[in-house]
Amino acid sequence: MNHVLAIDIGGTKLAAALVDASGSVLRSATRPTPRQQVMAALEGLIEEVTRDGPEPVAAGIGCAGPLDLAAGAVSPVNMPSWRGFPLRDEVRERTGLPTVLAGDAQCMALGEHWLGAGQRSRALLGVVVSTGIGGGLVLDGTPVLGPTGNAGHVGHMSVDPYGERCECGGRGCVERYASGPNLARWALENGWTPGLASSNRRRPNEPSPDRGAPSSDEVIPDAPSGDARTLARDAAAGDSVAVAAFERGARALAGMIVSTAAAVEVTTAVIGGGVSQAGPVLFGPLEAALDDIGGLGFVRAVEVRPTTLGVRAGLAGAARLAWDYSRSAS
Image (tube, rainbow, N blue to C red; front, side, top):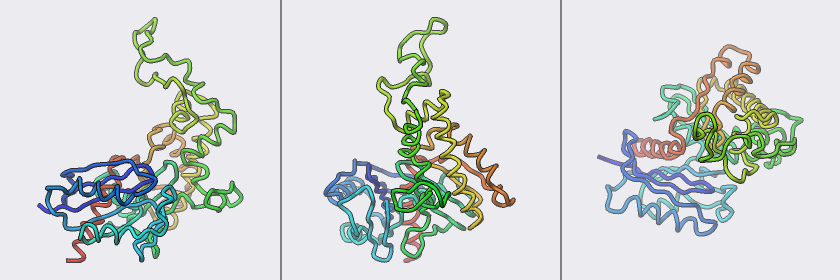
């Protein structure tokens, strides 16, 4: 059976896998992303995955952007050692394989369309809500990459032209309201004390006078930090500022989803990334905001779903990218 080499590159993790045409993974491996010598680490990872295995027929890469698709180059914001780095050609030269490149969030969307929550959707928007916000569009089974490879940067759609200045230089970007660090930043600026709402919950192994040991959802870390994970826990515990932060972020996400649906008639939006693990404290206000903001029938018909592949979506999309490329080249 033939396989392709799938590669997923982010600011914190490198991943690679051998994947067959059905999406089954023969073998995979991950490594932390080093600050320097990233290509050397990636080469070692590729060697680990392919050693003594079947020869892949092509390689697909999903990488954080921005991208220059024509040149096959990448300049990931969180990887300062790569600026205009010719990633596609470097992988092609080291592996000898036909190699294709796309953005990591574009691969997430393609992976969810192939194997995850977006199967059978004719018009899919995939959104990664994490340290930043990325996205990708899959229309009639084909990823929309754009002239330079940067289509789907929905995190930098403006939902308020008079809003806050974003780190990208724009104003009112979704990322400024709904990314993990910005959710926590706004909450801290508005009086949130991390962990306070859940401090009345018992510590691990602390017995209850009424019903024994605490359940797992009552366990909190000993030293809460002011991050999105703690914010989600406090929102679930009823902290009013934490709840307001997620409502504010969800409304920005809803504005972006509605605008995208109006532009390209998206029928499904799949939400992944670390912040999506907040569960109901994110998806509850998101559904409410979509219902309030959406007007036209085809816009209101967008179905929002959480990821089913999780961190595997990027590799799945890179594999599908490679399979499609190998078939078109043959």
